[in-house]
Image 1 (cartoon, one colour):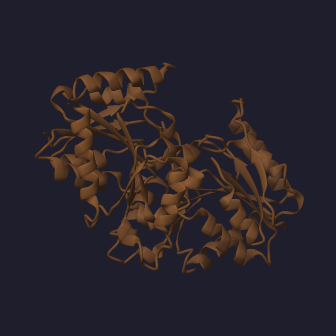
Image 2 (cartoon, each protein chain N blue to C red):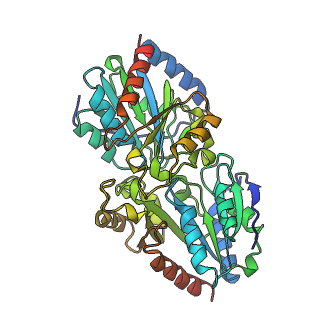
Image 3 (tube, each protein chain N blue to C red):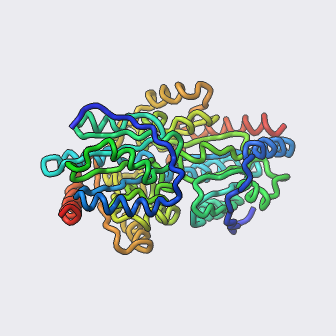
Length: 225
Length: 225
C-alpha cells in the first residue's frame, strides 16, 4: 500500500495487433492469478466513487490496486491513494481510450504477482473505450440514472461487450428529478446482451453494493484458482 | 419544417486539412448569414432537451434546424422532429466525433440559405469532439450537475475551447443527491477560459433558460447582419 500516486504519461501504441496482445495479457494474468477488470462509463457516472466503495469493502480479503486513466490531472488516483489503495495514474494526453500497451505501462509499475484484483478506470467515454480490448478478464460499465434510460439505443457497442452493467445513483430514482425507467433500461440492455449481469446500486448510500461485491468475489474465486 | 427525420450514415474523411475546411465553412456560413453552433457534452447531460427548449422559445423569431450526430439510432432527431424542428440525423458508425466533411453532409441536406441558426448536436463525448473543429461559429458545451464539479480538471481542452458553458440540471443543486459546488466549478472553468460565458439552467424546469436564449439572440444578431 502507498499513499502517493505514481504518474505515467502514456503514448499511443503504433502496434496494430492490439487484439493479439490483449489475448496474451489475459493468459499471462490468468496464470498469475490476478483478475484484471476494465471499468468504463461516461464522465461523472461514478467510477471512482464505486472503486472507493468496492476496495473499502473487499480490502480485508483481497490485495487490490487501481490503474486510473485520465486525459489530465491526478485527482481520481489521489482520492484512491488517500483511502489506502495503491493507485497508478496514466495520463493519456488527449487519447480517448486505453489499449493494451498503455495498460501494460500501468501494470509494469505494479507488483502483479502479489495482487488478486486490479481495476482499470478507463477514460470517461462511452464510445472509444468500447472498441479497444484492454486485456482485462472482465469488462464492466457504469450507467448512472441521471444520464437517462435511452443510452443502450445510442451506445450499443458498450452495452454489448460488457460482462456487467452497474446502474449507479439509484438514489435518484423515484425523485421528480428524473423519469429514468429501470425496467425499460433492462429490457433495452437485454436486447443487446442477454448474459450481462445488472447491478442497480448507489455508491453514495451503499444500497445495492453488496450484490456487486459478492459477484466480484465469485469472479475472483473462479479466475484466481 | 418537417416531421420526418432524414438519416445519413457518414464516413470519416480522409482529408487531413480539417482546420482549413473549417475556416472555409465558417466564412461561407457568415456570408450566408447562418449561425452554426456546435453543442457538445457527455452522454445524458441534456443536449436534446436543451435544444427542444431553445428551439421552442426562439421559433417565432428564427428559422432553425438541428444536425444530430449519434453512433446509432434516430431517437434524438425524432424527438426534435416531433416538436416541429427540422432535424437531420447523422449516424457516425463508431466515430466518436464530427469533422467538417461530416457536418457538410448534414448541411447539404438543409436549405441553409433560409436558415438563421443551425445547431449541431455532436456525439456525446467530452474528449474527441473537443479536438475537431466543425466549422461552427460558436462552440457550446453542457456540463450537468450530476456529473460533478471536477470535470474541468479532467477534460480541460473541452472547457478551454468553448465560447459558452451551460451548467444543466441545476434543479439537482441543494438536494442531498449531489455535493456539486457551482462557485468552485466556475473558478475551475475560469482558470482554463477567462472569457467563457456560463449559463446555469434547468431544461426540465425552465429556470435560467432565458439568459441563454437572450445570449443566443445577441450572437445571431451579431453574426447574421
